[in-house]
Image (cartoon, rainbow, N blue to C red; front, side, top):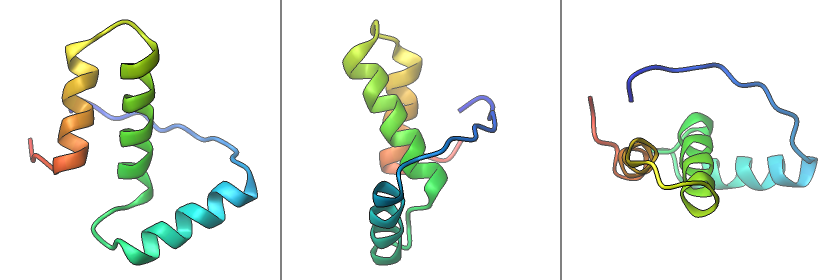
Length: 66
């Protein structure tokens, strides 16, 4: 991943509670990793295909250091 941008977003409380529960059970994940995986998967499924987005998705899932 070449760079990072800070994104602030409001999410429903139910979603936040579910995310917190997931993170408590999976300490190798953090909110940034989950959001990167979710957003890149959304873009892969709903936008024009972009190899850079695919790379972010795979790197996020498999934690490939750069």
